[in-house]
Image 1 (cartoon, rainbow, N blue to C red):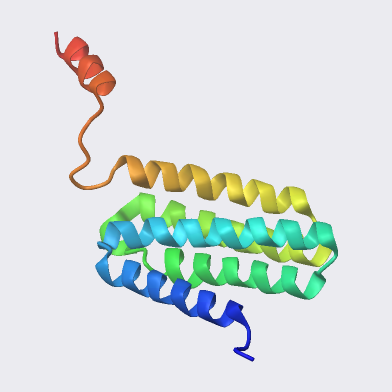
Image 2 (image 1 turned 45 degrees about the vertical axis):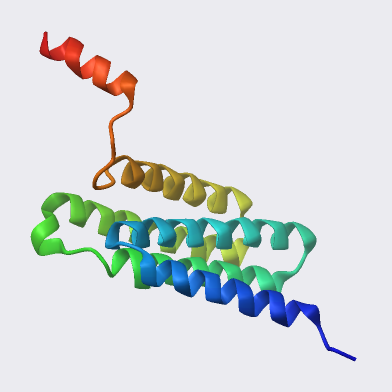
Length: 146
């Protein structure tokens, strides 16, 4: 009588994502891109295991799009210098690995890209603007300065 409840949940979820994007700093947007790619690849792994090949392909394509059109496109190679060039090459490598993972149902390739994305996300979070150093880091820094 009232239709699928899934539509309401999906619409509510989409509003939450849009609100998060509008309120996010550029730094937070990059973290969100990492998270989106990781989620898409985790979904792809589950879909691969369950034999849902069309959904797996769609999830991998979504991750590649996030990497190429989000993370890679946000690089400023003029300002970022060698770091930006290295990240560009790494993002290109990830996309290529995901294409091969999709063609060959290679879960290991997906997992290796997820590991790279998690490592980069962690590094990005560690350099967040306004991040307050943890007491352990402060104590280590004071010991180094002594």
